[in-house]
Image (tube, rainbow over all chains, first blue to last red; front, side, top):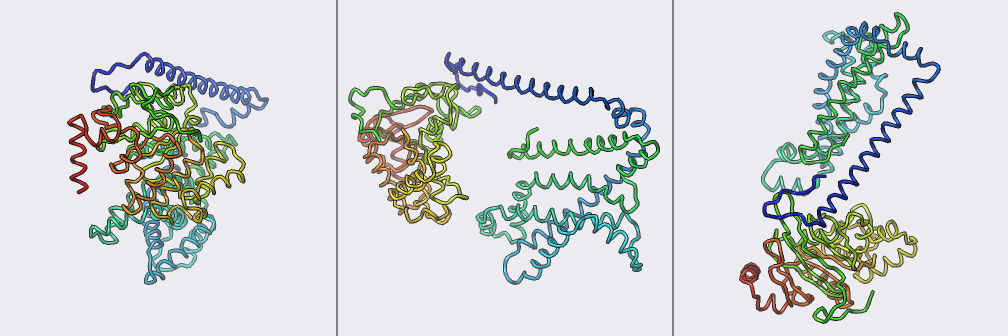
Length: 287
Length: 259
């Protein structure tokens, strides 16, 4: 915590205040030191326990083989590119569908009952169905119908399954955000002559989305990893690529490579949203 | 509650609350430059001054919701600005009531009042419940014990907030513009309650824009201006015939606004 605010006059801290500041500094230093020491000790203990275990050399060879890592990197990276493409395309589609569903679910009045019911049914069904089942139903089922004009690609149907499922989750997060905005904000916006749509767009949604950003981030990171599930339809994502590499010699290092690559993708994004949240004058998750 | 102390003009023993050269700034904005003030047991000090003159900040500093940049605040002889002092324990001895009530909306009225006795003071729930009910009865809201705060009027909510503070038997009550958010016809019920409190000998520091009320309950009125106490004295003196030009200006403007 920053001490000693900028003085605009000739204020000089009293001896007492200097003593208090010094005490606080000492107390802070002590806490930081204790925390740092405890962390280092804990890591050392875990590290020693793992590396001194009898199976460690074999474990290291199987999971952390540098040469194998280098050799498998191109294939895993190529697979990761699929994850990234699925992520990008699906997140746009999910944003659009989930926002529509969320807004439909928050509409009031008997006129909108059919839309509300439809949106509720959508959430009930697609949130309830296991994603894997959806993938199989769409990925193997739809092409089997042999309907003219429908695409045949596993990528398309896999992406659609993921989009449908995730939209249901995200719609509920957004709805919670919208409903958490106090009615007085609607009243204030409508009182200025803004239409329902404008009030939603310019007043309610910006506040709602800000409030649920951490929850939305959860879904984005989760989507990043689940994007690999399209592999069950026979396409190769990072994990599937790692699996193929592994099957050559039963060395599991490629899995670790894929894991590290996923972390490299997600961690910066998490810090970015924290930063964004803090900049908006709201407490983001601290590391 | 202790008996009513001698009037502050007498040779008071040590003051219950004593501020010496308190300073508080937010960034470059020095809100309190040099505030010194003694409050005797049973005394009611009313802070007046324009918005931004630091009235609320002063109350928040006393309750340790803000940390002073410099100076000392003593409660019952103890320096509560010392970083070695347990701030939670200090706050538990001081009651504060806020302008916008700040009731916990997820708790019933009774549970709002019960929270601190049970969780902070470790009083048995049944015993605390009896205390809390008595306190609600005192503020005239016994029948609302199970209601949610948002089902109450502003005046009722503010009375619950006062009960919530009083139930902990504080040494000192701080009241931050407790009637500013209320409809005029609801102001009376809250002010009456505060007058009762005062007559029971509760030590109070409050800020208000209700000069009529200040006149009736204050033992001492302090006019805050320019980061310090610009003028201080009995309500008759400060509100009736202020010595300082600034105070006169402030009161004049207030009167024209209210007219």
